[in-house]
Length: 226
Image (cartoon, rainbow, N blue to C red; front, side, top):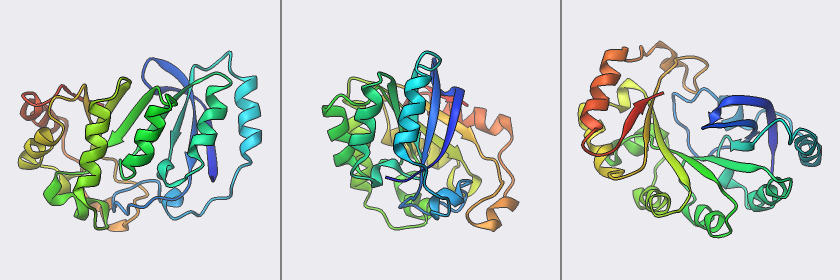
């Protein structure tokens, strides 16, 4: 387990809750537009886990939960141990994931260690590998989607809307992929500090285009711009 950064207070990252955020290093995707390249490329020093847990215990009166994000947290087999320590404080736990480890996701859910999951949907199946910069078996992503849709916890799917990987057709295809889900968020792309420097020159879609995507997605899933 390698925790490399902590944000002590957030009012926006865990819906309806005040949270602390733990940032874990490393990722198995190489999304060219990613703005957390130091996390992805594992460039940051490790913070002692027990120091973090002790701090959370001292601050439990002021926060409701903890967001575990990355990087990709499910790369770590000892994620279960970390979450158990947080739940024992006790605090709520929200997990951010790219959905590439459905087995661990299902285990965490079966152990009742998660209260909320946010899963990134990078593109439609046809464009997924291109969007994440590595080859992926879409059955893995579909399994994580299925697992969340059939879970009993709160969850969301979300996509950072990057013009090369999102258009009207892709929106419809994603709608089919996550049809009937509880909520889907479209996030505006911010071209800054990207893993591939060329993506800093890509202009985000204007608000009215995002609103058009929302209308396209409405028949499939409740969609909101974040």
